[in-house]
Image 1 (cartoon, rainbow, N blue to C red):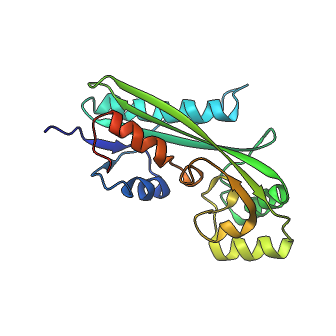
Image 2 (image 1 turned 180 degrees about the vertical axis):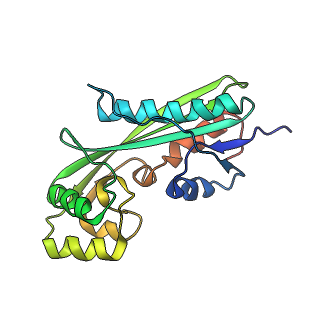
Length: 194
């Protein structure tokens, strides 16, 4: 039976690790998509647009493949919580998040041009941060250095200790790839999962 190649249109090690959990062979390719913010675009719209753009960019180069694109945008009220990039910005983000609720919009697209597959989904996860002291934030940053993570924390590691609760229908979405939806989409596209 012919199985279409599976490509993850992402350079994220977190997404690569999540997709590996499904036990399917896949390769990774950088989508090379401009991720600039568009005026007036809401966080969930931005995540959906970028996930689809990444999947379509790689699918145009590999028409016979099934391509997964994903993107995540975090927001605290109207403020987008980007990847902090360094300790100082991470400290500010976590201090701002402390005692408040943020929403993480994780979009995923599955595209197979030759197969006529174009599926998309956006998962919303709400995180309720506990009140954090400056010393707790500093200790956390020193131990985990989560500078490449939206919101400035790694929930799959020590970052879980920063929260009162997490409200989600798919816990993998907060890490960067909603596997419950993706597994169903891959089944719909003809792959055996599991």
